[in-house]
Length: 143
Image (cartoon, rainbow, N blue to C red; front, side, top):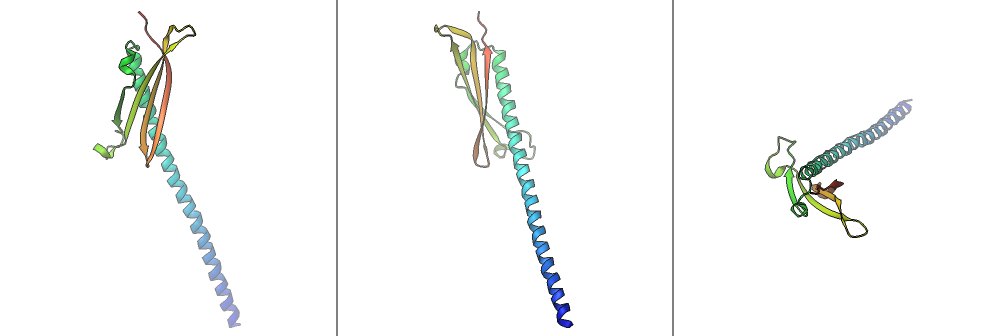
């Protein structure tokens, strides 16, 4: 009689240990999912910043109507992410941009009044270089 209650208690102990192990594995998976979600959110925020910078540069060029193509060809620069006020100086994420302008020609070799504008934005994210590009056809002002 005594040995049966000892076996039942041992069986309940093993059952409890297995349940705790299964629950622990499940919790670890849930915690990892949250970490992945936060990483995806960070990446999405950086792509948003890059697209805003690229659109600002396109608007800046558009205001000048591409009168001087050589002024913009190969122009580059950088800016820092200002969305996190707790970070300052070099702690902030650095985005670099490069602008390229290509004039377009028809089959006869005549220059069209349209130019292809490319703005590429690069940044480092967790030791990986990310890049976002916008291509836009813009009409050049012809006098």
